[in-house]
Image (cartoon, rainbow over all chains, first blue to last red; front, side, top):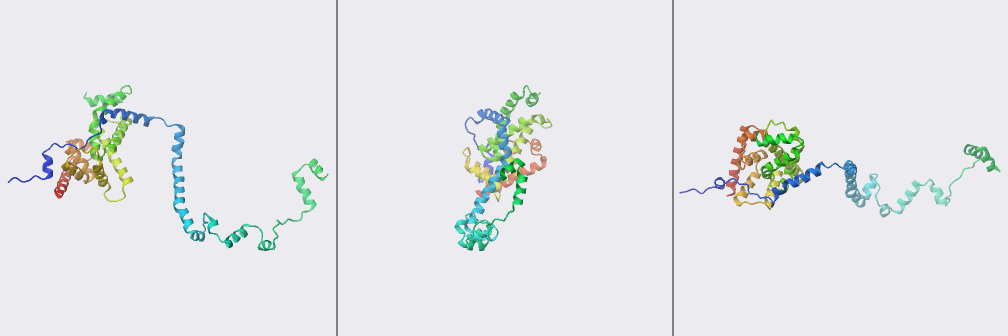
Length: 153
Length: 181
């Protein structure tokens, strides 16, 4: 009784042909395509192109930081403003989250005025007394004698 | 002077270089194409790698020492280019598992230029599952009948190790095909 051949034995009976094709006219046009690619590769890069090439890594890094900010920091600042505030970072949109008390505290800490000034309604900028000698020494430093004489007249 | 020696001499001469290079491309493009195609299993990738191979040849003509034949020099460049391409593709496309096998089987399944029957498809799939060196040796020996002596120069491995690789590859393919029957 003749044994049935397995796949490997069947393959050995036939020529070892590669079972692939190429697109029509591929080999006929290959030299022309290769020459075009060689020309493109060997073409000198313009100064503008060189600058872009040099800036590419920097631009890439800037884009990465922008993406990190967009995808990590911004959502955090929107969804977890309290957490960021505790850790020293300010939320991006303060008007949405700050209470009146917070706004008042911010105003006072950034202003040179005291709480007393604010409550008393005295919001004028305090001025110091200046003597005439001080005015004269200031003017003499800034002006010549003719100008000082004209001023005093 | 044989044809290869004449081409080499003309390639080294500035005046005849361009024409000689065109002649070289015409002589070797098909053999190199099929060598690369069997490594990558995709026409588009093969076309890219074949062009890069010839660009490398064009740029390195002066460094060709003629210690090896033109044929082995070209095959060595083509093999290195194909394997580098495969490794780059692997890094970009996959994150774990047997990346090369997955990439090659995907190429095989989606190849619009596959022209074989079911048995040939199974054979290609079994080859794709081999380790890199065994895959290379099997393809070069089984389809192209390249001598072990030439393979030695192309792959930088001893003839004995190449024979062993081929033997292991055949065993694995036979087992794989049997398991699918």
